[in-house]
Image: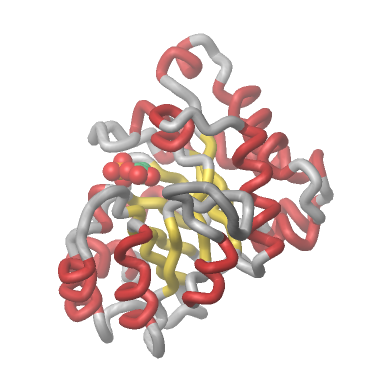
Length: 251
Ligand code: PEP
């Protein structure tokens, strides 16, 4: 049984004061973590506030990125070791904005995944195709290659507790959601890729999210699909009422 997973990704939005206001607004309104795991991914500058406010509530926390070294002369980077010490739970890696704007490669993402596990954090590993790739019929091969590269060298036990996220680039922040059938098709292919790389137990255990214009109006239909275990949500995760509605999609 895979516990459903609803994660927000605030991107470079909200300051610590706005983070506190969000925490105050969602307090007592999120489901128990055994029913739906809820996570907010926030900018590094907000994580101290987020972690303190989430303590004692079902909400878990994620950084939106980290570096693959624990410390050193890497100006401007965020240490996974420090994230763990702060009490952060997850780190989002491989988001298409990081790959596109900041030129992160599959190799970087794999190094980050290993650093995250080394520090007893968990990764949320994103993959997804561009519109050109979808139209050229390359979606499945492309996302499988991204997943294979990101997971290289990880053990089956690590992959079982990792979270993967299928985020078609053409659906992120565009208001264009992949249909539930399109999302299910690719997520099932990602699960089959994990089975091929590891085994059926691992593929059955790993949680795979869909991301791309998820909102309260479409979350139920997406979550009804057998292989979709949750949502990675950008825009609709910033308003507390919308996040509460997403988290309680089962009601
Ligand atoms: C995202 O940032 O990962 C995302 C899916 O954004 P949005 O929900 O706004 O499309």
